[in-house]
Length: 360
Image (cartoon, rainbow, N blue to C red; front, side):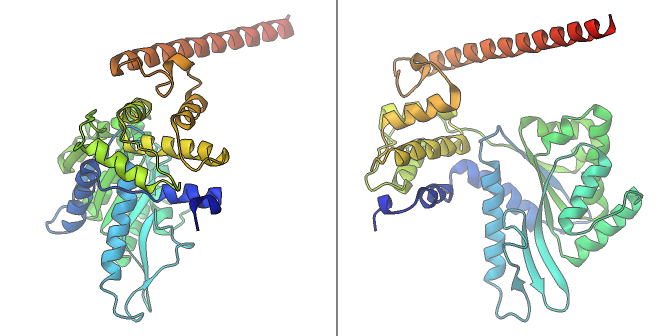
């Protein structure tokens, strides 16, 4: 069976399973591995921060680490009498490593919490919900802490990963301080290891909470590929692997210099952004019935994503060097932001005029 015989959904899903162990990914995953390994080796737990721009690959790191721990446990299971792997539909594999222990309940060595709130109470409620506990509106902070301590021990939770921690830092200083106290209390009182992940300003949390700063073991920033078009560079190795993985019967050479430069411009060298963009270009190619991706498909995908003019599209105009491309992109963004601000001012003025007429 050829790729052309498979559905668009199956082909795009295939791309979504692409993972390459880049040095950036391995370094970030090693931070999580050290945290996990050092569970209760001393009287005080610790925490680490893994930050990076959207598209840097943070979610890939977390998901890959969860799968590593799941495989490690799976390798120790002799039969169903000790631990049983929990069903994926009940406990998402991207949110926890969960097993069921007959006669005991759940065992979850690693848990991921999606941070959506910036207040102390709401954040703690999110933690307890992830653990599987619902609390009433009148439950005190002390009571929530007691529940958390008990469940962390009962479920053998060794590491909690807080994803999108920047939402805490985006609140006002007082709220951020109080929310950071939740993480601090889990580390100090429940003695659970904590990883905080998010965009770059997630790393500001220790700046608003001195105790959290003292508990921090590591602070890792995920960076893009270097722009190196040399044949043996990590960037070109990645592009070759991605090209081979693409669901087409004929493969486009992503490591061609012109293609590689265009992909770097389109993604700033960030692995997540690059992979997502290539997926959209593959969709264009599949919808057109092509048996191979081309520069035209990449150009169409970039135009759909950015609404950039032809002269700024890196797959149509290859004369701009990287500095010129970034300058043009920044100028267009400034123009767009000015247009947004002008539109907001005009709508506000119309609203004031309408209100004045009603009051007249």
